[in-house]
Length: 514
Image 1 (tube, one colour):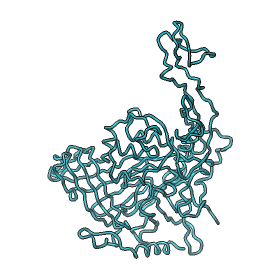
Image 2 (cartoon, helix red, strand yellow; image 1 turned 180 degrees about the vertical axis):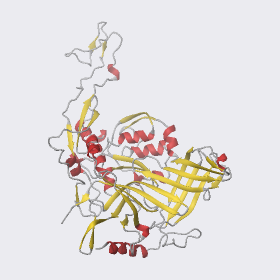
Image 3 (cartoon, helix red, strand yellow; image 1 turned 45 degrees about the vertical axis):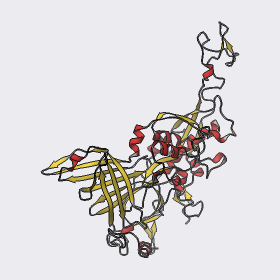
Image 4 (cartoon, rainbow, N blue to C red; image 1 turned 180 degrees about the horizontal axis):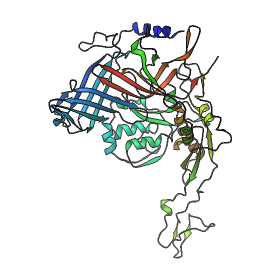
């Protein structure tokens, strides 16, 4: 199939759909000849005391709105052209509301968000005009900085949903309860885990869990999948495993298809055409070695744990002899007390655990697999470099993890303590780090006409022609065509139209069946 035929098929699909609304009664459609057409419903600022609301539409030259699966909060930078000394009304802490819809969105998928001004950039004055930037973030970031968690989490805490600790933290410490930002769909259930947050920020407590818990679905027995991400997009907060994101379980607005064609290509629908493409880091062996992508290792340290009841009292011996019991040690004064030492062995009590790239790839749910319902259709994203003998080479990164195997450790059959053995703790820590590296094995940056339906974590379908063809058929680039995950995006609003920059990643490529 030629590029023109591919584009025409996509165009015919879009032409059969009535979508979008115009300013007013909402009964019309967007201008199909303008790929960057949009409608603003709200672009306003409310003062910090809530007394006044300003419509900023005429003063905003540009804004850049950012989402990323690596960022817990949203960010937006708004450029203001001020000819009326409006900045004298601003002091920081104002609420900014943005509600905007692009003509490329198949449904009424608005970019609908509320942000808080945390910084007012330096003012550049030219004659009577002034130019400055309002730097905005999610309002929950203020709560994240101002609140601290000092609390035990685990199965014994009946007030906490142990399968959804991140949602509990968001609701109770970031005040998202009852809002769209706390949609339970966005929070994947996880294994139980016992820990104490010691004056941590809410986001830090959630990130602490991300490489320590496992999936409750999609993994079983010794094949437990770990590695979670906590991020924010226009749909609210999200806590999901990397493997569930790869399977498309975080995708809520459908899978959009974008095709790279020349600007003057006949039949090309510019609303869903890729305007520019860049390939960052097509190969970076030193980075892969430094991050342990090819071969990584982990070692567990068992700590000698002190019981409250064993705390030495005055006059007790500093150390116990080898034959003495910590449960009953008699001091010279005849006082029975503990020594503070534990029977549990400490130090490195197990061998180094090694994980190779092929082992991680075999365990992971890949982006290419499953989304189309075709089963295992993927192969590794690259061939192992010849200089790196995966069998003989030493691991290039080591992860050190303190083991829970001490006093009161649950049995290996008890799942109430999350990862239920020292072995599982090591496996979970290893896989989480390695899976994250695999997730970003292939990167692609593209620019398209603004689409408010796109969001971080969603699956997107990309079609990029290769430089070769068979007869009249232009072949697709196998490495850079197909399903990707939106790792991040930037919506750029200007008065002439909207564009969206997409930062895409994936962990595999389709099998070459020729």
